[in-house]
Image 1 (cartoon, rainbow, N blue to C red):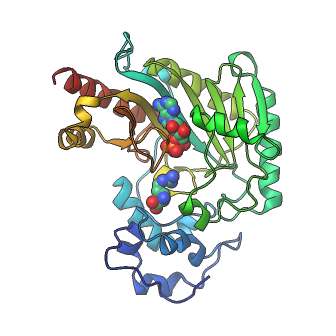
Image 2: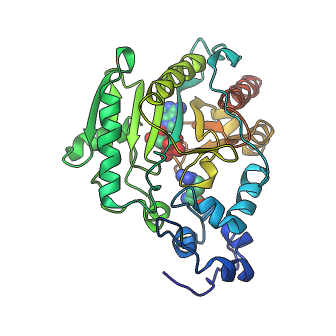
Image 3: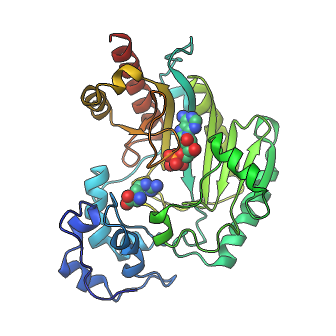
Length: 344
Ligand code: ADP
Ligand code: DAR
């Protein structure tokens, strides 16, 4: 890894480019966390990919304190969250005001709510060893095997999975794709596909990804717009898993994740929604999204495009807001988008 100040192109807009000064680089470049993670590793994705939006990844919880002179301004810029602020969690579904906004199913194709989690005693993906990643797979899949009722299901390792089965699960939006160039440069694709896999119940309404960008992505999803039901299932599942695993958490940053954009709740609550008319007026579409703290993605995940007038709409805020607020953000935004689509 380079120990000289990186050269960024003039058109670089990532938060890394904006906040890595020569002074901060000199102050941090020789520091190493207890897991051996360095500044060079933390910034490597953004140096290799100057078109990154963020450009940094943490290798462990200590990264956020040891490299705070760089991470703090990036967290402030993305989340509007100060170094002295405290994060509060509220996963109580009863606090959500979210009757189905589209009971006729005219707009919302499907609803998905996910959280990222990492085991408190193992480094994050960018710093994890192969043996540690395999240990995560064993510990988490064993905990999942003890789930009962509608959360019960089976674990399917990626290693040995038939290519056709992998492709079908990805096409059906259930399984993660092989890591993109940003994750590759962060060291998150090392030893792929060893130690990675997916757990799901029979209905594929409850799924857990093991060792993608975070050690766990805990997912509740179903067709239609019953956002409250999706949230309640996720809350039950996370509570059940917390009985057998300790997740990395701090009073300041909430749930600790490899990418700083997922800190706090580590929650992304999304709908796939048909908005063809708004899609032809992106200025109005984006104005409503901005007003409701929403992110617009394509329908095959991050960095993909919308298809057939269907968009992935989700909350943008994750840190400094509760899980209930994340879902309320998405819900309130979806109500406004449906009203705008109807009025056209
Ligand atoms: P993440 O949500 O885990 O950050 P992505 O944005 O890449 O990751 O989405 C992961 C997968 O989940 C993709 O296949 C995407 O199409 C699917 N997905 C996201 N939201 C929904 C939704 N509301 N309904 C169905 N599939 C969804
Ligand atoms: N591609 C990285 C990450 C941005 C946020 N998305 C995540 N974490 N999947 C970037 O800096 O653009």
